[in-house]
Image 1 (cartoon, rainbow, N blue to C red):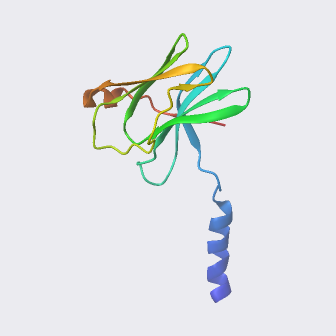
Image 2 (cartoon, one colour; image 1 turned 90 degrees about the vertical axis):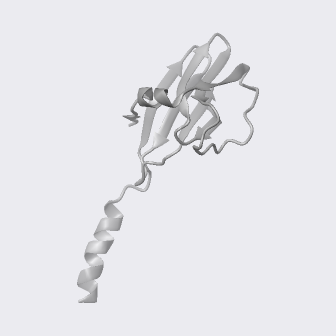
Length: 126
C-alpha cells in the first residue's frame, strides 16, 4: 500500500520542471550590448524583476527588485532604469554600479505608483 502511494508522488516530482520559466518584460539589443528585464515564474506573485546587461557572452545583473522597476531604456551610452521613488517594495540591489560595459547607469526615481499598471507583462522565454 505504501508503494502505491509513493508512485504518484514520485511521478509528480519527476514531471515538475526543475527550472522556473523566465518571462521577459523587455529586451533591448544594440550592436554592442543586450539589456534584458525579466522575472521568473514562481508559485507566488512576488517574484523579483531582474535587469541584466550582456556583452560578448558576459552577463552582469545591474538591478533586482520586487514591484519597483517601471521601465528600462537605452539612450546612447546610457542605461536608464525608471523606478518607483522611495517605496515599500523590496529592492535587493544594495549598490548600483555607475557603469556596465562602458555604459552609464542612470536610476530615475521619479516614477509614481500610478505607472505600475503600465509595467509590461512578460513573454515566456524558450
